[in-house]
Length: 170
Length: 288
Image 1 (cartoon, rainbow over the protein chains, first blue to last red):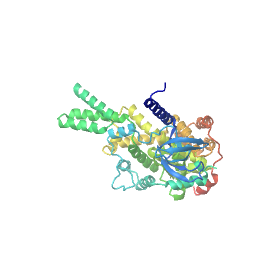
Image 2 (image 1 turned 180 degrees about the horizontal axis):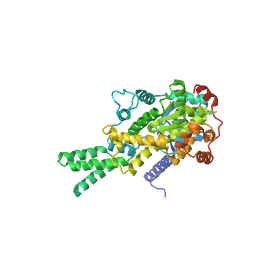
Image 3 (image 1 turned 45 degrees about the vertical axis):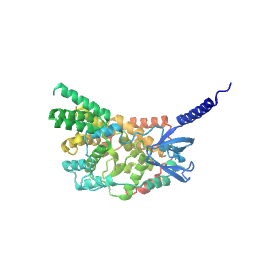
Image 4 (image 1 turned 120 degrees about the horizontal axis):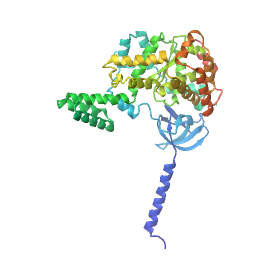
């Protein structure tokens, strides 16, 4: 005897649901373990960049080939990422919950930049330290400049490309 | 303090921990003070600080520590090299390595110390130093990447922060000197001076140096630099002369370090890629 129509529909829906859940549960997730990374149309550094991802982003693994992983972002974008820029576990990041709580409980506004130091400069605590320790203006300026020192991501990428490093390896 | 005060302080502390919110601590202090109980307010404040001193150091605090230590390193080593192209090159190598390190989400900056001794240091929050003397010993970019990888590893593994927190606990210091970085600069100075002494005079524990070697080697090879390059550099540094003996004080037992790196290369199958980039290194550092 065939089961009633409603029951059959319910079983089909359940089956489809279980299949979808299973596929979701088995999908491998990896995380971006680089400050920034590019998704490419193919598995070489010569392929066009189709998207950018950043540290900690979750990516669903679609496939692997050598040093490259084909991934899908949470927004649905697909592309290839250099495997060394990913990790299998979610990176904790610099300020984890405990560190944030500790800092908050210690009441620190220590990093507030002083007015005299300007926008780029030493924070209030280190400027206070410099005063107490008698650090010269020349040495303060050196650390000030060091703090402000920046190289755009694009120039780092170009440096890697020129040297055949990272995903540009020959 | 009466026992019910202690109980109240403990309960508020538990609520505070459970909620993960320091505002509760301040609110508790406020309520106790307004209800005419300054002792209870003091107790809540004190207990909060004890817990706070046991929790990890946050990034903003780390920046304060890193900057203050950097000031002392620069002062002790007679200033930094002012050669923009050279500084840029060393920073590019550091960025290349740091980008795929285990802690790529903070800025790293490298300064070259105007000093002929052979050494390198890392202060928290990514303040890295190499001496002119060390740069003169390095023969290719892969060796430089390994040295910078070692220093980046000290930062990513939070070695100095660990020293600071451990020394506070050993000394039974309950209130974190860090919390008074601005309101009690004398306490902050004590913390920084102790950390600088450890970094520049005594050196970190052998265990931390070995860990930095191993982790740094992994960082440098992740970018594609030749895994054997660092072994070659360490072997050359094993037999320094004269003033260079200072290196042994802060980075002891080179033979054990070489062995640890070689074991890592084998166990992690790190590749001898042949990527040394000697020509680029020589071109960029000819004025060292």
